[in-house]
Amino acid sequence: MKALVYGGPGEKSWTEVPDPTIQNPSDVIVKVDTTTICGTDLHILKGDVPAVAKGRILGHEGVGTITEIGASVTSLKVGDRVIISCIKSCGHCANCKTGLYSHCLGEEGTSGIGWVFGHLIDGTQAEFVRVPYAENSLHLLPEGVSDQQAVMLSDILPTGFEIGVQYGRVKPGDTVAVIGAGPVGLAAISTAGLYGAATIIAVDLDANRLEKSREFGATDVVLSSDADWKEQLMLLTDGQGVDVAIEAVGVPATFTMCTDIVRPGGTVANVGVHGKAVELHVEDLWIRNINISMGLVNTNTTPMLLKLVAQQKIPADSFATHHFTFDEFMEAYDTFARAAETKALKVVITA
Ligand SMILES: NC(=O)c1ccc[n+]([C@@H]2O[C@H](COP(=O)([O-])OP(=O)(O)OC[C@H]3O[C@@H](n4cnc5c(N)ncnc54)[C@H](O)[C@@H]3O)[C@@H](O)[C@H]2O)c1
Ligand SMILES: [Zn+2]
Ligand SMILES: [Zn+2]
Image (cartoon, rainbow, N blue to C red):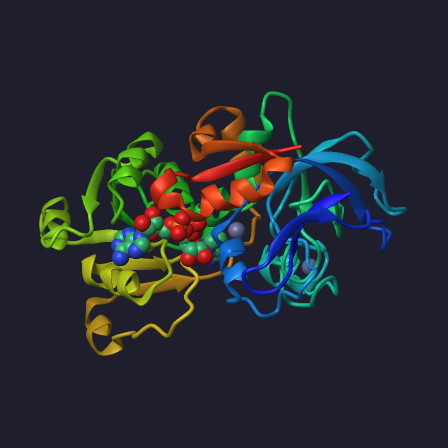
């Protein structure tokens, strides 16, 4: 088969590799029909994730059709259309039992690390992928949900919802600011309404992404390159600050922006993956009763989000800005890597 293979920092190729085979009784093999690229894949290609070995097939998002099942798999069959979750979950370890799939203790990849696809085991940017713990890590796709919609449920929708909206404890009537209107920030924007957010403010440096955020439910937008961005934002909250500030960028400056704009008693929900140390001013924050949350997505809300996508209550199609076929994989990476110019959000790549 062909797959997108990591060759060390700056190196990748769409190349011939051996087909995956069943290795454990709970595995299945999925023929990948649709996949996409995540910002994390770009981080890996820069060499920022040293755990990724040369020769690794990248990708942790995908939708496909089961072609082979392991001996212990009873609830899935050949021919089933499935969403591949970006997080492995054995379903029976102590962490899986509490819904903390991001720390699944199953041995696959490494015990205690849920994100293994395209990281510690071969991923989804391939014609076929082996999925461990398949009965818990795959989601059956109902009729009426397209591949393009479903692939947004592998990672970005549960991430924005769980780590942004749920960890941020959004409640009815809240004013929520989302710093960073990339795919993950837009996923938080599109799901903040589920808990009744009244005002949803998108904040970004990119005017195009701000415009786009209205399609996902942003009620107001603030261009953070404006010198008076903070005054603009405070005006939208009667000078009080926001109830919940969601960080969806992953740099120190945007984390500080969140702690600056949150109201007393409010929550900062950090979603961004930080590569550098962030200063935390507990000496100022304690007296303002600020809560801070963070985490790796568990994907335990995927079945619920899938229902809402099926009912067209989450605009999953709006994330898809560019379309490619597998033989255009390198072009897809190039378009995604130049998102500011190409206006790419999610590139959808089909077999
Ligand atoms: N916690 C998790 O489980 C998890 C899962 C997936 C992704 N992530 C992380 O979420 C973050 C967002 O992912 P993405 O794919 O949407 O990223 P992205 O790079 O596509 O989007 C980031 C957005 O932030 C904007 N931005 C950059 N600097 C800014 C600033 N100073 N002020 C305002 N906006 C600014 C950019 O213009 C861009 O639109 C990343 O750090 C990613 O690694 C976390
Ligand atoms: Zn991802
Ligand atoms: Zn587990």
